[in-house]
Length: 569
Image 1 (cartoon, rainbow, N blue to C red):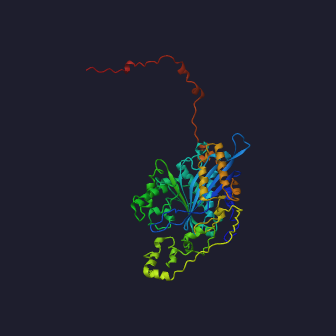
Image 2 (cartoon, one colour):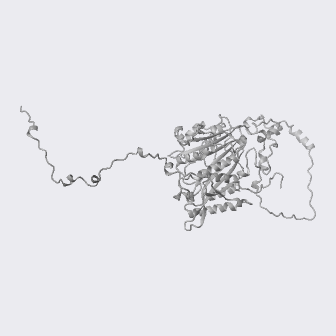
Image 3 (cartoon, rainbow, N blue to C red):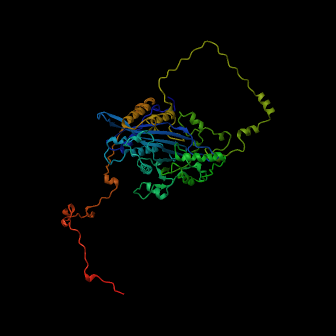
């Protein structure tokens, strides 16, 4: 074992922390099976465009995919149970030297959770599973003095991850307004801090939620935010893109908008970037959109946010007590060092010399990532060496005098001794041979999935889920078993044994009544005034006098005294 390797680094042990946290929020005696798949931190493209004259931030991405399944009796035989997936969520973690971003990519349910037989009025466990999983990832990836951000967009759709599930009549599909309110209720518990379990140096100074809905004003958007009993309102109407950016406010708007996969903002951002490429301007400014506020105003006219549809963009910003720039050793860390020596533990005291140090230029924490603030020479260092060199005639003479003769290789002679082949005795997982901490990310064993795969395998198994069918229970059962076994077959070492862990809830849930759930105010008997009923004989048959009176109606004849004659002229 090498010096940099730790005992147990070859295998992935499933985190018991997540299972324990899920058990405390799930209903009592309700059993679920949790499957957690993840990838190691992999270098990816930056989320934000760099300002003109600067380099993009080095970014690492982790993909986490969590699914939950239940056991339910078959239709024909009630004694045998089958396993079926009920929920799945995908979260992408982007880490830099400045912040950590948790992007909720997709979340979907099959609708078969109703087969679990929970009491009527019990809150859906899907909300608690999602909030607990997000809280677990944020806590395990928390770094000292580094900001963390949860970002997502709520767009209603019939199915995201489970094809054919829309055909199942038990699936409850929320509309766009209901989905925005649902996500706000899911993320609202994350704003509450727990100082008893969190160390003092890792407690957040403030945790705030942001909500913006293109096309709605602040008063209309305020109705989607959950109401808290406290006087301190942790939610704000708007976006935190300027607050979470490490650049100044005078940068182009394209440098403040993140580029997430399958995001409405990213698609609009790509269309606006065509203006920059066609005009060939160097300031990075768009022609049609000049500010970030105008960008959100234009988003309201996009097809995804208009035509009767509503899309909500939600952020949860965790701000540390002391927010400062990374240290000099972190910024001076060479890009080629971590990629070539991922198997070695990073030492903060060790740093490779940068390009500026090689040519005797001063280096500061601001000059390692921001090229615009670097001390740039008037001429290139290589060009300066060429300019200072002697003429070509003198250079050729000096180089000829100091030229060393090239040694000729010796000709090999003698018998050929064959090399014994090396027998492979174990299947080594090279994905685990990387540091747990670095200036750009943290990768603790508790934050990893039950099975760790590379990016290609992760993409293959997630795309396999999109080609299955969950239209009915039989198809959903076979599709669930196929996907679970396919992921298990690609596991290495003892990871296949940890794939799938059963968790039983311990939380006593108070079942809400139908009247309380609907929010109907029941009046007391003293306030209810009943309408008087008529007599029984009057309501059943008409009066007797009216029924026996068959004579025609009499004509009223006026007397002679009531007739007034017209006077003669």
